[in-house]
Length: 98
Image (cartoon, rainbow, N blue to C red):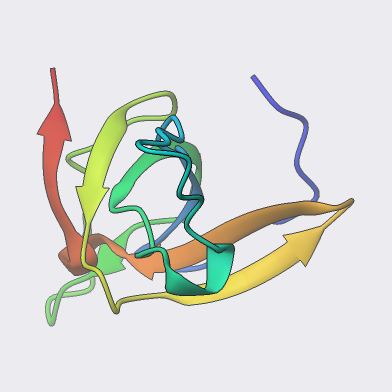
């Protein structure tokens, strides 16, 4: 488990993208700027949870360490100690990879 200095708030989840292995065919290398943002990520930290209208906190459906699929355009990218993370709302998590 990484010791990250970012604590998400509310229903936000801190994830780190899992980079796909680069495959080169026929000697063609695809530049980073042309690659799609990976949708697979690892949950690093959880916020406090989403509050309902009644004031009760709904527990997260994911836990730290889960591999998840996230929305391609969701979240806010942050960089800390030369590592890239993304803060997403739990609603931007599409599913858990088992």
